[in-house]
Length: 391
Image 1 (cartoon, rainbow, N blue to C red):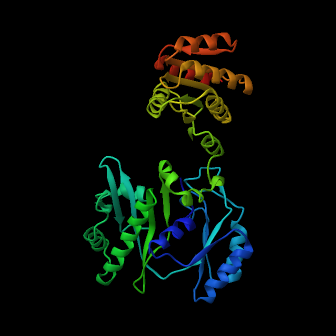
Image 2 (image 1 turned 90 degrees about the vertical axis):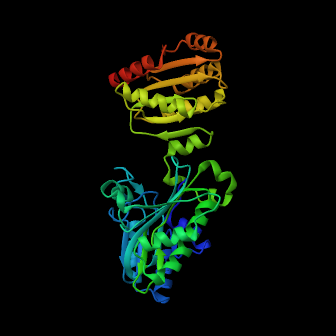
Image 3 (image 1 turned 135 degrees about the vertical axis):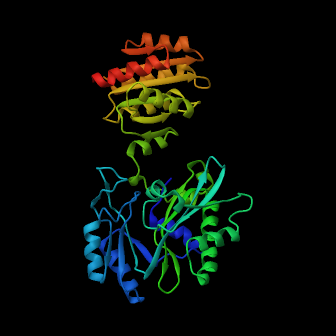
């Protein structure tokens, strides 16, 4: 789960991480009040920042500096409701519904720090770079030596010596090192306590008067751990998520929209990944990742089918099921119900194996609907790609 920048900064403040003063605004009036308070408190300027779940906001016109309350209100009026397009939103962009109004700071250096889970090492890694303000992926591709790494023993947490080492490698001044250790320790504590999967500060800045701040903040959370964090679950903004993914979550379905035209419905994440691979191997492009799970019932299968078909880019459907916990006859019943309910006209290719497979095939046969039943995954992939290309 992703959250907005202002929400991430709210969490970090609880862990003693310094962030600029500011508040979220959804109207011009709220923006005016916040900007007025900041200028009254001594701010030399304010930043009006669009709040969407995507990077590259500044390049897309979603981050602007105002030197007066009037200018801040004018910028807020232009940003609220605008369609902000960045390299991460795609050409459709996102509608801006929230803004962060915060004080400007006298920036001396822009750096980068972040924490994520390194799955190869099986532990969190604290990363840092002097190339702050840039896309970290771009830095890693062009100059991997510029990425500093400290692997963290989960039983010990971030050790003070590791934080000091990173601070010196980043070129911080000696008098800033202790401040940096506290800053990084707070970041790791926030990462650990909230079951985050990614915590990124870009840029992490030093000011001309020697202070350290998280000028931006991004936190992603492990969905599987959200049951432990009802307060974080409440931060979810479904307006920033794909509508089909939101609908799928209501039925405990694992769905991710992709860019292709072959709709895939599979049970089991490993089989789903293999199915997408073989569709690409056959020359096609998957339109989604959809795992109905090992214990799905006919109702869930029906909902899964409806969600899959709601994607107008889908030209053909591949259903690849290995019946273990999910019996093949249960799946077949759900598919038939969904096909009749949606009056589907698209080609549907099925590859079925496992528990009650013969009963499942008989249900499909007796349905009177035009299903294509394949014998192997290779055969299924080739047939569905051909059908999608012919549509």
